Image 1: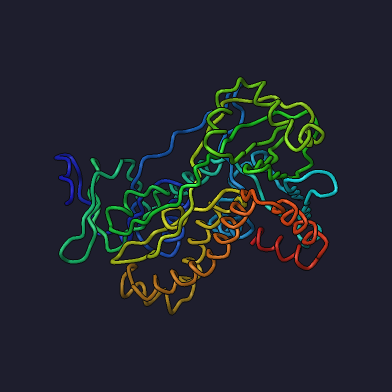
Image 2 (image 1 turned 60 degrees about the vertical axis):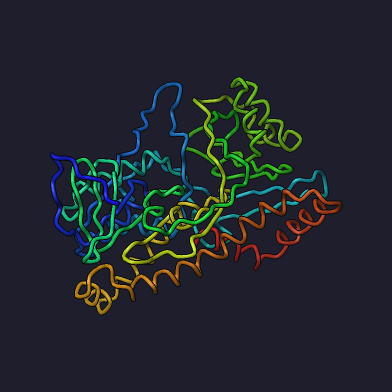
Length: 412
């Protein structure tokens, strides 16, 4: 049942769409729809603003943006508003298996081998938010309601009513972009069960002694996965996915003990590459889950980003999949014939969203299968399992065509 509106709440009459959530995917979706001439209401509280300080120079949360994500941001004139000193291009990737010596699997990818200058770009969450909110302020077709959603309901005429303490929005299309634990998804009757990996991703920033040379590196270490992502200057962002009992113990360590634990990974390989590590700021952890919604569109409600699909961070594709959701919508609307039909029938046109859902499910499925499969494979503790998976990595590394295909899938 819809929550009662505040006595001071105003009524917003029928924007073409209401987007719930002020994350990256929701903001980009708003900009895409507004650029196509639709009126959009964005409902949600602005995320806490990260402010650099001497102890915490970098936002602990960073993203690895794919080529398709970069092109989408560039088309929306957002990319050029991200300060270049806040963007770290990645030109090489190295991945190691969980054996040692000659038996250790290894994969190496280089931008030059794929005919591009950059494999991916590492960007702080706060820098991306700054550029997106700035773009929204210059888009008159977007109204941002900086308030938590207090309730929503389906009305008799088929429209959705979204209630906040500032305004009540009535719209024919509701886009749920409010994350993996989407409350909008639950209230709209589209909720689904997420598989819990009983693990956490631990993130922090380190100053390094040796240059990273724009290389992203990853180690499979038994049942954990350590990634070191380059940042501007002599810094790296660590993302270490580990079982829950290990992550809780790791978070209790002093900063210098954390650094020693990381440098000791893979027989000291981290120390050989980066030298001594110095922790810069706090360490955070987030739960690791996996799942895909069976239905992404129903009765005027669309699930986007983590509200529709949640993947393991080992491939760094979570945000990119969400931005691809938006890019696919932009591509569908780019057809003048389709755009005119949507403008005539309304943005909640079922034909548009069924086509979008089919395309996105097909595109997301391989990423979900691969990330979940790799996570499962490297947690297998069966006789000979480590030998097989590490030899498999060595074989892939020796087949240029297969490596090139894998690299292109990662860049997308």
